[in-house]
Image (tube, rainbow, N blue to C red; front, side):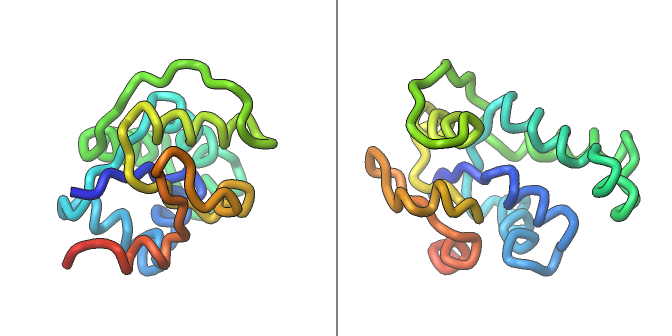
Length: 139
């Protein structure tokens, strides 16, 4: 089974736009079509983004709905501890995504972040867009 790290931008997009490619990825996760790999830090980042007033208010997210979302993500993911890593990218948050992928034995990182996508591959881990990831999933 494919093991994939979903970057925060993919998760948040999937939550607020259910019929988008990221939304279809979350649906595939909850149907068991792949294993998500994440860390407490990445889940905290999702929580932080979902509580931004602009997002919270526009999409009517309550603290209870945000907590339910995070609980579901954790239940359907392999949540791993991620040690500190060396600086590999311009953005320290991106380094945490890469560390999660490496230490979680992920096959793929799914992201819309061009700073990560430009790497294409790192230690046999592929970096793909949500659209390309959907093509790789078994039916």
